[in-house]
Image (cartoon, rainbow, N blue to C red; front, side, top):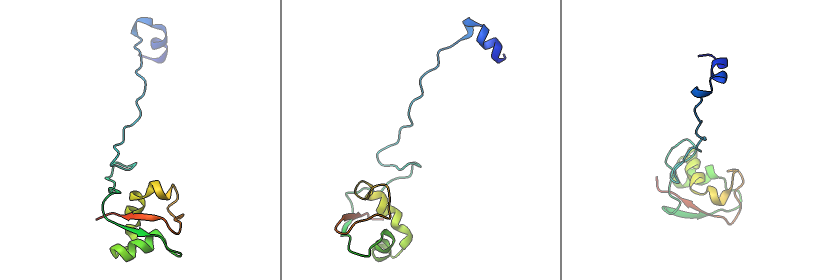
Length: 95
């Protein structure tokens, strides 16, 4: 069946269901990975000169784990993980 056949055959038309938005669970990030719970773990108050990687290095021993801190505190930090502010209280999730 070609495009013209579809357009000219009124009886063959079927209604198209509206697209459903992709459901993402509250406990997952954009890629479907589990997000750490923001209510578990220790807290840390940001001081001058801090970055998420410095905090991760001091707390976990691995600067690359800054993503876990960001994901647990995204609501506090906002969309830019480089913009943490002095005095913010961050949750450091248990890994």
